[in-house]
Image (cartoon, rainbow over all chains, first blue to last red; front, top):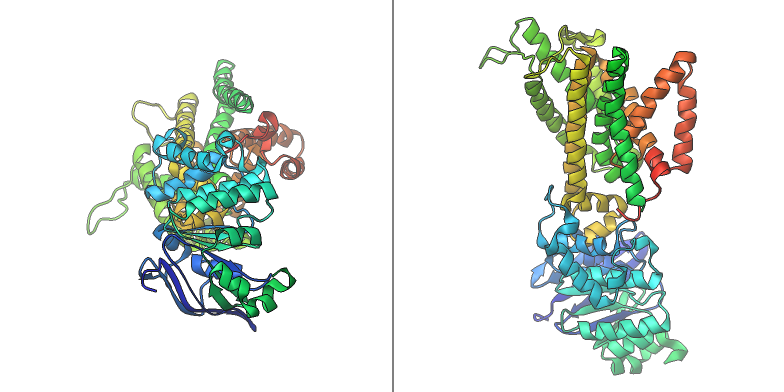
Length: 249
Length: 328
């Protein structure tokens, strides 16, 4: 437990009579990809929002990097090194692809209140931002408006922004959503190489990707974690088969 | 390509602003010089508002408050100086002044402080609530000015002699125009630098997607508050010049009509375009004096025009002429 970078204990959130997160306990260890799977409406995105600080939990504790972050808002958590991507791409549509990444670099540099130096000729922002675009294969789109690139490219840009934050942990909310088989395969390879940089909590519906990537899997059903284990353990778990994998398993 | 066309249009606007009063000077038409001065001042008020409305996406319906604060800074300081009555004697002596530079500094400081308070409260809301609360604050200041008899109350305050600027005869129309045009140029240059800076990137980011801002670890609130204060200061400076142009300041400068007018300059000319407020203010004044001369209901076609711009040309006049931008 103590060596985990991110750990949740008994995290609960209730919306009216709906228990979205029911005493969720899970942890994310250095170097691992921990997949969070579950049927639609199981509360995966709600849990990601609770971890990112966008939704306040009713009870329970979240520790990040050895610190209790219950009272930290989303801005503070991001600055501590929790980088999240969104299920539906959330970008600056009127900015260029490059500007989207530069904004993240600006945040990391800690110097946002600078009023006079033109940002687009600031090499300390442009160069590292370009480097991240090259990593995700978007360098040739750098000057296009984010609104004008393809859906798949927007998913790549989400990744580039997260990478630019140099986080200590990634929260990826369905990074493969809406990507073709080709793109999913490429992203799977990319995420595989990413675990060395920071551990990943991965919410994903693409089971091929999950089974290929995950060191551990947690299964969320109606806000409860019904099982956590390695790929083989989860494949062999009867509760999981019944609740989720069904005939696929 | 698009950028070049916008640069061309901007240059034409700038040249026209300078050329028209110079031609008027040659033709001995001082009234036209006054109109051009009014355009420069209104454009400057719009440049201030454009910072929050255009780049920050914050629809402030209370910028008349800052325009009026600038105006009253000029009026109050000048009236004390002209009547030889100190503003206060104890604990230390503060006298009035007829020096524009001092008036501007006072206008900047007071408007910044007021904007800090108004912004800190209103920026916690968004959308329609933000519009209504900024309006409410401006109306509070408006009614305060009306009910304060020391400075003319409803009747306003006359400045008998236009305030002075070192080395300049401010009563000479073309000299005063030159002063206003230079101030406008400074405000626009400042605004251009600001929106290209790190701060400007963050401000424009906060407009497009606050969720994404938060996720990269930048709190939109502080960015917006700083922008709101800077915006108020620019508009206040324009207000001080406007009081000097008319040699008169009254609560009208603080009323919601004025807030609406400043907003019209920005929307007509082009929201989030550097030269938008200048284009908008020029068009407004031209319409007011061409149409207003022949038809007392000139605001009717203005309303139709505004409707067309909002419905079909989000980039305003500059947007229609220069085309859509590639990216911010």
